[in-house]
Length: 476
Ligand code: SF4
Image (cartoon, rainbow, N blue to C red; front, side, top):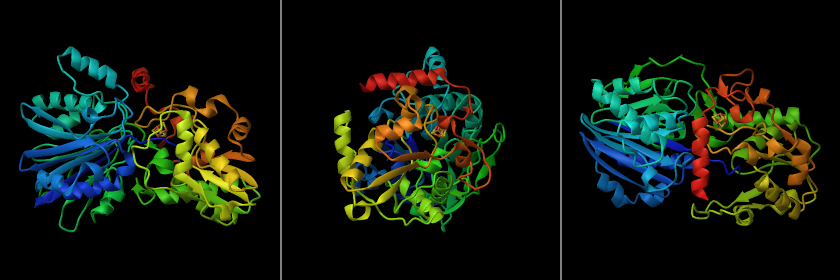
């Protein structure tokens, strides 16, 4: 319920023979819709002939049966769902991005944010490049294309381009004959691949998208790895950039962004969230009658808190799942109405009770305050809020829209003040120490937790700060 957004979801198909790769991509993107709802697109490759369509809207809105059919059969495809954190929204930034160059064509789909995109864009513009969008994806496309002119293969171009790219990127790239998957050397954003029974290889941001097309997860793409897929051949790994730096997967993927049924880098998201709830029960016990979670990502942690504490779990809120993307409220007053329409407490569960309320985060505090008010109005006697993440104290530069410091409530107030502002009887956040243990329960596996006060895994990008500022200005 954080109102935070992941930037994107990517999907790729490499079938051994001509098949309905557009249909497979459609189902895969449907499963990844939670990673981006602004725009989506699919590019199909039939023996070097590219057919593409992309537009603003949800996957189900953009692609009708006729539209999918018009993309035709093929043996390679890439797809993308987008929520823009860099650059403005709209059609020009929709992906996959298509590039024609002297050695052929390329389609590229990207998840993450570069931390040196402004420098790269300036360099390219000085060399004569003309940009049609404001997204990092076009910068990556041009860097790869530039290398492609001087190299003998697309994978060699990607390998060389990765020496220039800094920050977070999980890429799916399609050339006339190949599908390439690549993940930045830190592994900020997830990327995995699997195979269907008929030998079709699938690449996706999350394993839930493999499940959607009946593909079995093989493994995650390793940080820094390039994987090359060609129809009818075994995938080939290029590990040149692997192990160049510590793995720092985004820990907030497990807490909020990813789907609970996904397995990221070997760790199931539901299990990680339930573990967060169990740790919370140990760190911040409460005398209470019932544990409830804020849908969706607070639910798994609430189950974990209940199991650890022995306090019964109950469904406390019903979420209206039919609120469309068009229901976007720009002002604070309207935002409050949005919460009311989106969530409704079940009076019979909370009335007269001492309630433990679990949510994944508190950003500005506005949404939390409204949820607390709904519970009070429904008759909750006491509310003990527990948050399955540490307080946000820093912005994110790696592909999410965690806000600048002046908007983060934990940067301006103590926990006691926040409890008073949002109207709870007690408040407890998960410790950073326990957050590092979400995936195996005992020790850190190598995560980014910079927004929670840990060190940034890369140089702090002043350029990225500038991008964020420009985006905010363009949205006013
Ligand atoms: Fe994830 Fe926070 Fe790191 Fe961004 S700063 S990558 S949201 S852990």
